[in-house]
Length: 193
Image (cartoon, rainbow, N blue to C red; front, side):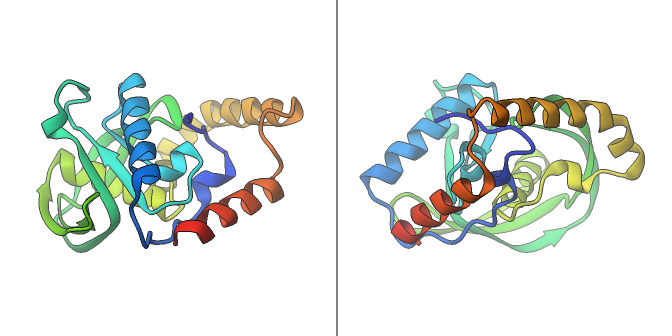
């Protein structure tokens, strides 16, 4: 498992809800958490690791030793938004890039945990921001899609570098073509959704 970088096609994939949680999925979730910690992240969506599942993990401490701060959100849905705030964001799929993004200040989130229990979370500040960022991923929306025109222009060169890196990896056969990626995602989805 590895984090895919922009402009990998899976980042634009709209995840479908999961129907079941089993030992294999729990193992993937553990790998996602470990990978998030390895890259000093605080949130990671399944499509960032080339999986089509509607789930993400979060630990705002970014500390693997703080297991009580780990959250797994399966089939998350924001049911209410409140307020608005602009803060600087980054993303593990856009290494070293940060920009201001406007998001709701508070959200109410419904999601399932790995035991299949439906939970409701009232979040504000950083937890609300992370949840919105990760749900955007599950909907195929990237934080750069939410930038102001001037912020997007300021990132233009860095985004072009990531696009060149991706093209080079694809030419070397490291990343398959879009058709193969789509077929793989469909196959994985049909097994779990």
